Image (cartoon, rainbow, N blue to C red):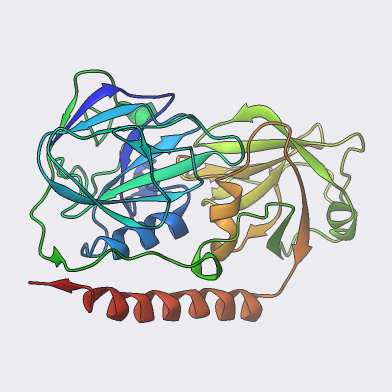
Length: 312
């Protein structure tokens, strides 16, 4: 079990999210940086989809009330256990009574705590993910706060030796360019690609608003009839400012769609923070599929390597 001594800025329980509920207006939710989350879960030997803690900018302070194997994955927030620095993407044996805390992120926005056995909160609509705006999942549908107690699921492995991902295997958090697939409705997407955008203060789990001195124009004069939208959709509002929709976004929208951030790059978007600068690179659907297929193959290879470092 884990006791929350300080819940940080915005810490929630998240897993892969909810699927198939868009018709009821319920978003996917789940981990924003899915790449770091998946790597963390693999490293601690969890089954696919086990829940983790998602930290935003400042993690907080946590006490382990039982021995457990942990991994911190994502951006390095300056984590320490009992005041001893710890690395991201490396397994640690946290003894009962150990205290985890951080200094806060200097670059990037999100990090994850994966625990062998997963964070064991009740399933709600098929997921343990927290959707704060809807009050669903996690701990009473809200961010963590002081005094919360988090159960840990059963660990199926015993760690024989520490596991650490090399730098080349870790996510590349270069956020300067984000790859997108074009929307069939946009006929002058080159104007969108040739612009550098700054992230505004309007940023949360629903979406990320961008701005630039030059407003985007398009050949579509009016907004469209509302249609389904998903994380990764890049909308442009009537003032010409793009918004990248994220995990807690609405399920339908009527703004023009410029393009779609590829699944393999959504983890980079999740690490954007106010005043960051980005631009977009256009690729096609087949290229996007090849990129995500390569990542999935990497997951499979890592799972095999990790299992050799554990024993039942």
